[in-house]
Length: 54
Image (tube, rainbow, N blue to C red):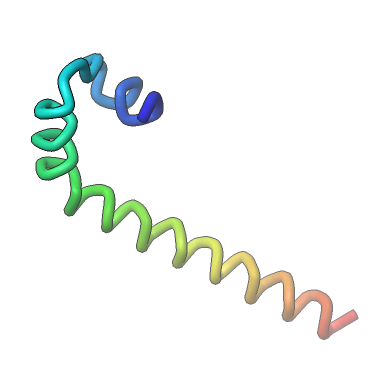
């Protein structure tokens, strides 16, 4: 949660605000997660191909 707070610069106090924040950011979070997984998969594939060539 601190990462979200840092990223958007507003401290979240009430649980209601958390719900609204999550609802607002959910699509963005989903695309961030997909991008991170894609980058991780590419890095793993590169690692495997390097190991295979060795």
